[in-house]
Length: 471
Image 1 (cartoon, one colour):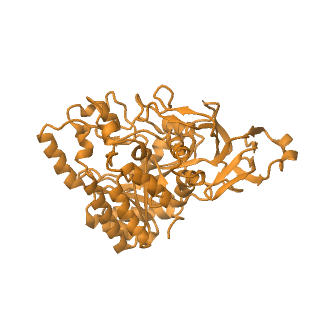
Image 2 (tube, helix red, strand yellow; image 1 turned 180 degrees about the vertical axis):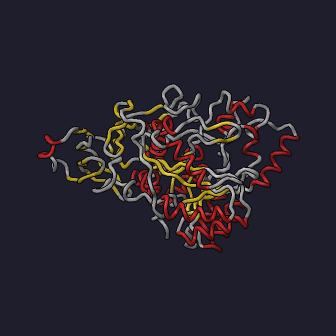
Image 3 (cartoon, rainbow, N blue to C red; image 1 turned 90 degrees about the vertical axis):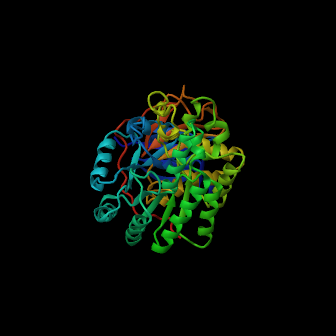
């Protein structure tokens, strides 16, 4: 049953500023915004009136990089679409874009169909898909056109890493980019030099260097920077929009900034782990503890200034989006597959529940502004991947995806309290000076008073348009 909800007394934040507005929701959509008290006569007709006094009212978070149920390294990511989207909702994220998978030799349409089957009826919030192209051939290129024109899947991820699984060589990347350019679709790139990394990994293991920290040491920043530059040059030749995923190093940022300074349609995201975690403090923990922090691209050295560089790039917009690359694995029976051999540790960190809070802490510490928080976590991802203005903004006609956030509240991140399907937390003990109070997804209250009040199956598939963020 469609409900009418009124949010009163809050400070409505957008990518362009803040204003004291009351927000009227009618069914799935935002009906109107009005100055405080404007809807006084409407209150008796509302099913719920939410008092947001002293709190921020923000558009629901849009996480455009998640991997629910992803098969990797002999196991599967531990969050299902059900557990992962419930956890996302607790953290103020109301839309995700996950990755459907095609490996070499598989059919792209079959990969997309499998992901629809996994997600359909199992999501607590709205969801869309990117498509991984793991085998670029004539059939895959034709499928890119089918998905863009008919399926609402308008972005395609390629890998310069993982030979034998997802890897594409430069010729294949060129062909995929040519197709994307013709379609207006976006190419997403995992930019690391996979063949060179494989050599360094084999050499490290031969020397008996098996601890988790060698995951980072065998994936040096130079091989991220080189692949980033190569992807940018291929995009320049083909005129395809390029989005570099999970940027982790200052070297890659500088390469991206140069291209953007010349007016290229090159964009980048980073993730909370690269802003807060490091090689020295986390990946190098004694024994096998560092396995909890194995992800690709890897955590970088704090002493070399990578974290500082990424925060600066978020301010200058050389990095435009913060996503999670949420790909969780439990320590027991999953990360432990790499005991004695770091190359066998499943790559991934779970943070879909914490992205909004961790980025807000950057507001508290003065790294970014309130408006930039909303822009990075909601508005730009929606625009980048064809969801705006349905998502990413509080405006009449937009979906009523809204978070009431208390800047005077606190959140302490712990495995004891998180809702992700994981037996550890990469951010254990992190204190946040803020708290998600209430979350609405398309007008339905899905989280209130730290309780899930939504329903599995509420989430709908999002058919996306082309990027609305191109220069």
